[in-house]
Image 1 (cartoon, rainbow, N blue to C red):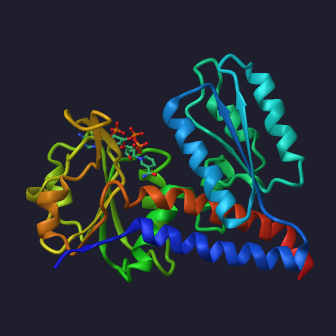
Image 2 (spheres, protein in one colour; image 1 turned 45 degrees about the vertical axis):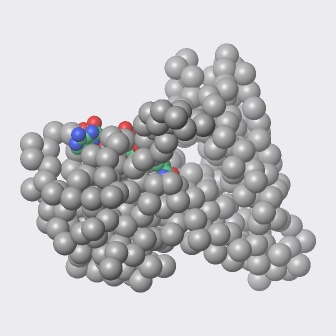
Length: 297
Ligand code: NDP
């Protein structure tokens, strides 16, 4: 029988574990972890996401601040603001919500964030450490995927993991993380992308398939083998006439058909999505712990 991996439940467990840790840390150090989120412009999806982050921080007892900046802010002013938070001891994590307006160089902004506050794990220093297997801030969505696998008791050692998608925020980091010679990883990893001629050749040999493509219902039952574990990262809006919103959210995997063959599968919504914010909070606590708790121990 296929088991649905309930990301909502697992993310809620992680938040409640963090809440306890924050309470204990407060007693021990008199301080709490702080996260600042910087949002430029008024992209509706980013606004929703930033609001959800704030709510989650509140739930676990962390300090959360959101800087909402006009879309026409200069690159220099944004870089100066990041620098201000690099030096502000109340904040242990800095997150600049992407995408940024075209006149701002995203790479420059990410590189401005102090690597010891890079809770999104996008700074080149964090990425480099991740690739060579050193302790660092792991990017939140890939970290959420590994957490879903381990909390569902799905073993990865020696398994063939096929990742479809090679973005810097999901595909590449999750592949690198699963490749490491570590507990919860140690997999044989194949990464596919749009240049793959016959993608089924690869997907059919996956023990664990991770789809991070951005194409609704792309992976169908014919493309996977029996008992595959499926992690669907995709979040795609498709028209749903007659519904209140007029659209619904689907993943990159054709859930209904693949469900029949899979041993485990994540739903969309309610699978990987809720894990991303939970892991952001986890990274913020890690930064706080590195800076504050290790000093008070
Ligand atoms: P990107 O658009 O940055 O990357 C998509 C990747 O998929 C690219 O590597 C692309 O290949 C590959 N791809 C696209 N079409 C095909 C195809 N037909 N065959 C094979 N490969 C293909 O997307 P992201 O990684 O940012 O996001 C992927 C999905 O995950 C999206 O739906 C996004 O909304 C969702 N997402 C969800 C998150 C969550 O919290 N759950 C967080 C981040 C993303 P190529 O490189 O050759 O162009």
